[in-house]
Length: 394
Image 1 (cartoon, one colour):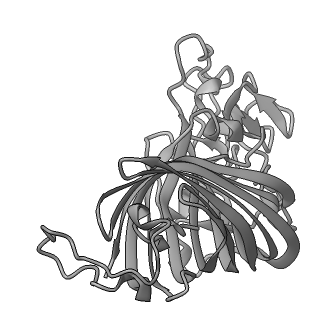
Image 2 (cartoon, helix red, strand yellow):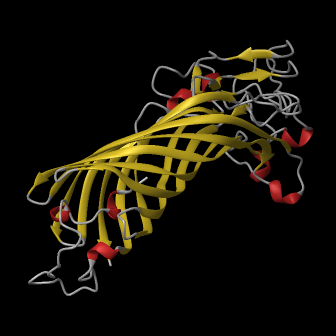
Image 3 (cartoon, helix red, strand yellow):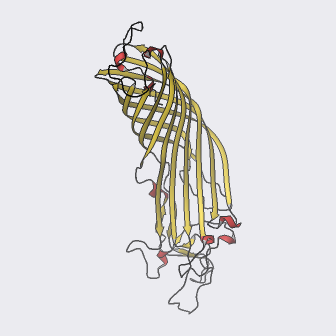
């Protein structure tokens, strides 16, 4: 991805290869460079990045206000919904803000005598984390007289009895008959819940080996060809946590329902492109790069229901698949390189990377516990941000 570090110093462009070379009059107190730069040599670079990525999630209702009277002991009618059914939590609440995360690009390489070079590059973006939630305390005006809207409901069905939630979640203060609802009137962790939270994690990293060779060159312009293998990895996790409490505010780990949906796009392929460099004078170089890549995307997906007491043998259900697809990528960047002294380069630029046909859990929740099979669909992704770095030739 970063081939600029392989350049010879800009002031050497157009220099006669047979001419003698005089080292710097005031060399830096570092073991860098040599008195025969035309022979090439080892180089290393490091860059700081600040990138953002699109989130693939779409609208999906997670929880609403109210609860279901499962046995009719509250309303007299089995499976009657009590409350406003107003949306309390939606997946699209995780997509409302743009998050920039720091990262790094590092690499090492070798410049050959004829001017070509080869480099091993690694790119890593820190984890982007998005969160949203709903509790038993909504904003003013949502609560009803019976406080049914203080509860949260999600229609998770086909659950085993171990997911029943605590007893006595519903208590009537002014029961017309003087009879309280049954202990499991609001059966299920997701029925009459007190807290629901969702979060989304996103990670990216990339490895590549890039061979670079000059195709055309003048004293102030250079066109380079780039080619090599590339591996890119996009990892994402959607998590939904639901907590049910009884009427006294108590509940244990067995009363916490956990749902996760993980998608891991591992893309293996090759990249080819070109790089243009314009010498502006005073040690400044304008660089523009365009690359295209094609990947075989081997995707591992997994969705899972479990409780907070998952280490004590309570039942859980999981669905895992291995899928694959072809993913094209386009990558472009523009930046300024500055050579403050020989064998040292500074860089500041902006880069955009686009991936097509990757897999994602756009509506990540399947509410059927026993027949868990959420829909994973194809989508595009865009990464963009700033890069700033340092390269040294030894």
